[in-house]
Image (tube, rainbow, N blue to C red):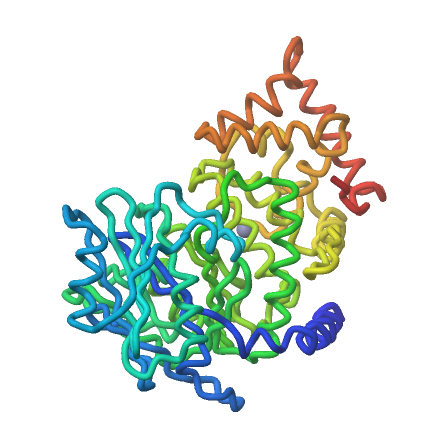
Amino acid sequence: MLRLSCLILVCFVAQAMASEIYLPKRIFIDKEIGTCFYVPYNLYIPSYQGKECYAVANIIKGRIDLKSAMRIRYFSRVDSDKTINDILKQELRGATANITAFDYKVVRGKLGHTPEPDIQALQAQGTNVRAIICQQGKRIAGVMINGRVREDIADEIIQSFEMMEKLEKRWSNFRERQSDAGQCFHVDAQQTATKKTKRPKNWSDALQVESEHFHITFMCEPKLVAGYLDTLEGLHVVLNDWFPMQKPQHFKYEIHITKTTKDFGKIAAKILQNKSYENLANDGAAFGGFFSTMAAATFTYTDKIKYAQMTPELQLAHEVVHQYMFVNSHNNYTLPMWFNEAIAVLFESGKYSRSKQEILPPSVRFKALKTYYKKEPPVRVVREYVEQDKAFTNVHEYVESYAILHFLLQEEGGHDLLLAYWQQLQQGKNGKTAFHEVFLKPRLQGVDDRDAYYEQWQSDLMKFIKGKKAEKKIKK
Ligand SMILES: [Zn+2]
């Protein structure tokens, strides 16, 4: 029933957002120097005809094959003593062009970006040639557009050319790591680059789509994905409200969605380096998706048959919460395991879109837990959760964790504590230590009999779970 209602919702949203499928932009990044620009998709993507595949441009030795009479060349210097004027002239290779100053800060700012400071830029305009070159210290990069230049497209490329904050490995995402030999996988689980090749090979047979904060590579129904993007952008609004980002997002979150359990299993086996996942399809998938910190990407699939509790939307939202927490706490992934899951469960069941966001309690999980409690004691008691950090072995641990978080947030000042906790993570504090200091220390101060204290807490928690309060909506 839940699955059905979700599918109806997605179809409805998909219609409203369908244009996004046709007008995405893709960022190419030079990893060493940290630059990107947005290539207008309409240059090389054939009109979408319901196929699940199209060819995307290759990046080979800095040349981007756009399958048109217009050629684009990317160039960069990591450590240059020459002036940008000299380099630009050299890159023009004899072509006549007018070289003028380019107000990088103002142009990028108008596009809604926060440009890195101290960037000087020049542009060149001539017959059949356009170029931009940027410099920050000894870091120099640019693009040259030759051939039958279409001015509107050239403008878009020049204006979107971006000198990013210098990329560090910890910031690189799945797509950026295509240039890390042997690190990345095609959606069909083939490696995108061999060990010896530095440059990536192409993504050839998956669809890609981007929204403001997400990039999805997918093999499922495009309509579904358009709906997912709207949901995820809405979720992003909520997350940024609860856990404010310290700086603008420099790359889009990578998400990979396969249709079948089998394809998902293949990827999971590669990414998680565990061959047994290849048999997920046979086993019946009790495993709906994951966020990999190594790949800095979320993976899931849409054919969720045997594990009806998790719909693809729910699974995606759940993993993206992990992804958001990971990225925005500066990859400080030291949160206690149960607490990390509790936060993901807190947001997974909501109804989100760009225009409206509603956090809803995980009713399906609660219902299952209540049934479970009719015969069994709690999987773990509150003391075991808050004082130990153990991996989950039982599905009910998710909702027990959530209940503890909900319980903490209900108390006066609960939300302030969560924000204080977030700030500590941002300062690089260990997530387990921070949890103790922010949430536990004030509670346990002056408590002589800890056993009795926790017993009381456990009994309050059980009343809370079995009563109606736990299923109430959480408000910030
Ligand atoms: Zn999780």
